[in-house]
Amino acid sequence: MCGIAGIINISSPPQKSLMEIMCGIMKHRGPDGEGYYMEGPIALGHRRLSIIDLEGGKQPLSNEDGTVWITYNGEIYNFPELRKELIEKGHRFKTKSDTETIVHAYEEYGVQCLEKLRGMFAFGIWDDKKKRLFLARDRLGKKPLYYYLNDKKFIFASELKAILQDKRVNREINSKAIADYLTYNYIPFPETIFKGIYKLPPAHFMTVKIVQGVQSSQGDIKQAECLDLSVQQYWDIKYEPDYSLSEDDWADALRENLKEAVRLRLISDVPLGAFLSGGIDSSTVVALMSMVQDTPVKTFSIGFKEEDFSEVKYARDVSKIFGTEHHEMIVEPDAMGILPDLAWEFDEPFADSSAIPTYYVSKMARQHVTVILSGDGGDEIFAGYRRYLWARDMHRYDWLPITLKKILFGIPAVLLPDGMKGKGMLTHLSKSPFERYAGLNTFSDHSYLKNLLSADVITDLKQNYNGGNPNYAYLKGFYDVCKSDDYLTKIQYMDTKTYLADDILTKVDRASMLCSLETRAPLLDHKVVELAARIPSSLKINNNETKYILKKAMKGILPDEILYRKKMGFGVPLLHWFKKDLAEYARDILLSKKAVDRNIFNQNYIQSILKNHQKKGRDLSARIWALLFFEHWCRNWIDA
Image (cartoon, rainbow, N blue to C red):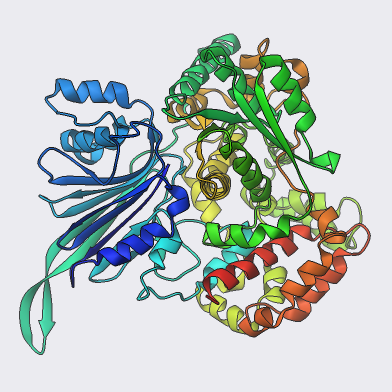
């Protein structure tokens, strides 16, 4: 895995010193080397983590005549087949790297080369003949790409912090992004925490052209160069269930596709292993790795002293079954020691606390391997979340008109006192199917934002952010665009496009790359995702069994105690930590003079959050963690 960066500046040639600083701050993404291409208005930079063709794969890399240059982050798993195809068409290769395969695929197919690529990627290709920069992200969003644009300058990079190294880029906080963060625990694409800096969405490509425009100066008309930017989507998940195949047929097809996806991800010139939680997703990956490679799989697990959050027992069981070389670590409640580092690496406020164990297991794995396989994506693709069962049960009443539901369920919900059993259920039943699920997947409401945010921020939000209310439009856009009438399918699609891309994959990329570890996700091979989209939803949840078809596919390979045990998730015991070990720490940070002087939050309301969390039966740990992460982020990127 690598770090990439680039600049187009039509006012003055980019300075190599700036490129070196931009790439240098991403050294953790590529500790094995650096490279630069500087020519006129264009500059490309690269930090390399060597995985394939250790000697020949240095970047930026060009075609034969030096008219096409690439800086690239990722892995293309089908590059041997694609390379052969391109050689047959007359292309000449000077390396054995997957990087050069992309260059020649672009020469041959143009932007349609994306259809040929099977893997994870973010790259920038400079086409000198067309004076065009072509950038793209992989289909699911495993690799990041940030960009900044003004009239004369375009900057892109793997990490937002690299763009900020240009001191002329303004660090003005985006108030809408603050509200989004408090609503989702992350900042949805294409926005970022800073005004004027954006994320390229997954499954999209961008072209930036140097074109001739018309400029008026004191009444004179003259030709002047300017930048023209275009963003397009190139892939989407199409849910077209095929009812002609039997349950056994689907299980067989899925198992073979997963085995191929795992096999492809074992291509590496450096040591590799697998994360192993003991859940069905990571256990599936480890089981299939054991079937297709000759040597024992190196596996890595993380746990906690609090047994309700620790899955190490199950990971050990899977390790014994498949004879893996197993490593595990127990995380102590000193996680605040790593919080400033996480806030630095994530570049934006990010409140998924499972970034802590993800970082620690990545750090442990990096001592033994350079590449790791993970089980990410199984919950979204095969319907593994428990909330899908809850949503489906609630959906049984959605045949009723919304006006009638508000009368039957909404009025009694309002009349019942807070805290009374049944009030919450009635409230949920009174909502539309989308609003109900969106509320389940978000972490704030109008009253929370109104009480927490300062008057100045609220004023700005009233002008620019849905009157200060939580903005579900981001989720609604994906819910509505899904071309399926099946409710489970619609919420799976929404989760895949939002929570998976913006939270899960962002967390894994940043936490692992902080340790210079490449992470590969075979369950998110786009061929597997497309296959899963053709499996009827009745085979994803069947008789209240989540991931039914995946369990059927792995039956006889994984033991029943792994396939059918209760799902735990990859959480952290924040409730315990903030009630005991970390309560004073949270108070000192959140009520500090630095935090007060920023005037972003209402400090009296924060005091009430901290106080109420200590009461018996109250758990406000997720909100406290979100506020702590935001404060440490400010200290890294606003105070600096």
